[in-house]
Length: 406
Image (tube, rainbow, N blue to C red; front, side, top):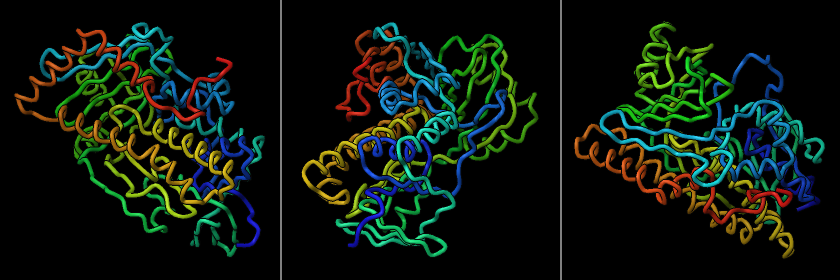
């Protein structure tokens, strides 16, 4: 192949794609980020994004190592110190506390757009070439390089093409990579709500027959809710008058936070499990939702994607040190091995939880309640869960480790 325009082309400028692009550029790779449209980077201070993420400590470290964390903190980030989880029927309940593991918090709730804005505003300084209104119409990929055809007739020559373009990844489809796709017959209703008794720096999750209700703390007395239920139930929740919705939501939360009232819009989106058969092919890699989609009940989606990005950076840096091209399969297999097993195990665990807690069986109800009760009473088991929530206990890639400066 003739001289390459860039070492890496990242397709998709969401949270994972933008983080990967900056990370690679900081490692002296030449990077182009291709995105159909520039995201909105300005909004009024009294508005809130319907989509938020529960950021683990490993993801916090990645964002710190990329130099964008403090910018986000100055924008809008909410730490939570505790978490309450309980079942709709019975005595099962568990309480997590950051103090149990000598940590200042269990994680942070951050609007997705806040993360995207911080990353996008950091790309130019890192040397990333950003091309919006760019759509791939085809590509020819080998280990030695990738020839990209873009809409309008433009072409690019790159060493590696990375699909970070979401669950409906065009890159994955063009590459002919199959994916396991299992709809959950659930939709998630999302909204921002006001809590009469404030948010108490605590995340709350109640498991109900049709799916979990999660209340994720935002500023002061606000929560972002993720309410998983049947498709018909989700439509009803979105369509009903605000007063009726507020009553239903307060009842679903057992009024533990007093009366809950919605602020602004409600939206619903379908839930499914999806996993690509492969994360890599000659000259090509998949990260984030392009590779795997998970049930949101534990809020692990973007955290898995950030781990993908960090692991791919490590693999490419190692490969370069051995004289390999970015698209070499020896390098990309290292990335795939490091991430696919962990992602598969996490998906399986969330799938089991989903089916265990969305079941009316009296035997399973007893099992759920006994399990939550045991976890609550056994300190070591509870602390293990807390460490998992923080993102500890993994063989973390370099970017996801605590910054040396602390």
